[in-house]
Length: 616
Image (cartoon, rainbow, N blue to C red):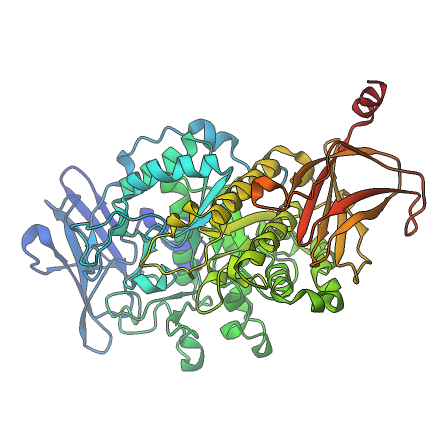
C-alpha cells in the first residue's frame, strides 16, 4: 500500500489512512512528511494532545485505546515553519456540521446492503434509457422550522429524501438521480463544489449510514445513483488541505497556478501522493456507498492550465485523468464515468488503452449552448440561424455525448430553461414543449435539473425549495404531464435510446427548410423507426411535406400541440401514409399538420401491421 501510494497508483489508500476503529480503540494514520510533530486531539480524552509516531515514509500513526465511533478528532500539526494548526483528517469519513470542522470516527462496514441483484446487473447504459434527474439535496424539498437549522427552513435527512424522491423519480420515468457534490464542504453557497472532506459525506443531511440507506433504497426501486465528484480543487479554509504540513502538500507551489478562478486551491497532479489521494477518493464512494456513476466537474481545468486553452495542455492533468479512469474501471467496470468538459479536447470518451481519457460520456455543452441560444431568438431571426440547431449532428459521432440542461443553466442571471424561451408567458410554453421533444428525440443520453420538468420560472437558489406550487397553474401542470409523457416514450421506445452512437441509426429527412424553420429526422433501432418533425417558426403548416426513401405508414404518438398539453389541438390523427411523389431528392413523401412552435413524433408501423390495417 505505502509503495503504491507514494508512486501515485493507490486505489484504496482510505484502508490505511484515516481513522479505523475496532472493539478496543481506533487506529489513526495521517500523511504529513514535512511536519515537525503531529498530535491526535480527540473528544474521547477531553481533547488532550497525544503524540503520534513518525514513520520514515512520511506518515504519522497512533492507536488510541478507548476511542470509538462517534468521537470527534483532529490532527494538531506543528508545521514545517513552526506554526501549530489543527487539521481535519483528509481521509475522515464523517465531519461535524458546518461551521464546526472536526472529523468523526465512524465504522462503515456495519451497513447491510440488499442490492446484490442491482449491483450484478447495473449497466453503463449505452443501449438502455439513461434519463438523469440532477438534484441538490438541500433544496429539492425542505421541512420548515427544523430545530437543527437557524434559518426558517430545514433539510430532509437522506432517508427522508429517499421516501419522497424515489416515488417522484419513478412517476416521472427518470432512470437515475445525479446528486450535486455530497463531499463535506463548509459553505452552502458553493453547492458542494469547494470541498473540505473528500471522503466525508456531508452531515447536512445525515450520517454515512443514512446515505447508504438512500442508495440502497434507490437500487431497490430500479434507480441508479450518480455523484458529482470534484477532482480539480479544494477549499482554502485552514482546517482543510491547504498547506497541510506547512508546505503545499496537495496544491501547486507556483502562485500563478496554485489558485483557481473560484479562489480555491488547485490540486497538483504531478505529485504522486495527490494522484493516490484523488483516485482513492473516487473509489471510496464506489466501494462503500455502491454509487453507480461519477460525474466529474470542471474537467477543462484538469486538461488545460487554469482551464484556459491558450495556456496549453496540462500534461500532468491529462495523465492523472487517464490513470484515474483506468484504475476505476479495473475495480468497477460497470460504473459510469461522465465528464463535464466544455473544450474540444480529443478522445475524451475513448478508452485509455486507445489513448483516450477513459470517460463513458461527455456532456454536450455545444448542443446545449446552441440549442438554448436558438430558442432565445425571435422567430423572424431563426431562418438565418437555421443550421445552428442542426450543427450538433455534424460532430456527434466524435464522442459519446450526454445532453445536459443542468443547474449551471438556471442560475446567476442566466434564467431558467422556460424563461429562456422567446416571447411572453403564454408563448414560452409551446416553445419549451418543442424544445423538449427535440431533446428527447435527439441522440444522446438526457439530464435535467430539478424544476425543469415543471417549467420553473425562478432561478435556482440553494436556500429555497423548488416552486412546487406552480403545479396548481394549468400551463405548468400540463407542461409537467407533457414532460412526463416524453420521458415515458423515451424509456419505452428502443429507437430513442438504442444504438444512438451508431451513425446509421440517425438520418435527416428535412434539414434544408430555413424559411419554414422546420426540421425532420429519423431514429431507428431494434426494428423500430421513429420520425420527429419540428416546426420552430411562429407559422402553421397544413400540410407540410417530408420526403422518405421508401413507402411506409406511421401514426403520431405525441404532438406537443395537443389540447391535453394546453395546445391548440392541431394534431395528426389516424394512420399517415406516404405517396409516391418525389420530394427533395427522395422518392416518396408524407404530409403532416404542424402548429406554430410544435413537434410531432411519429412511429413507423411495421409492414405486417400496416398491411393488416389496410385489409381491415
